Length: 84
Image (cartoon, rainbow, N blue to C red):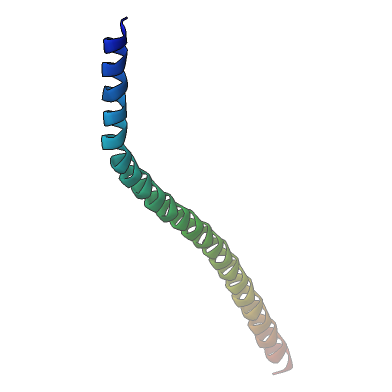
């Protein structure tokens, strides 16, 4: 490769670098925004899963409480029936 060809390719690469740099900056900024959104989505889904777990525990707690209340109601009825 002669000196003229080397100079041509060097100028060509410098020109491409100058032209593409702002575009790569825009792409990088867009990817940064996407990353922030995905982080928020991931955090949100984590909190939703925790909320679902809490809700399921509350459902079980309420079912147990209702069962215990019904058991106590039955005991009271039996005791009142035995006395009456």
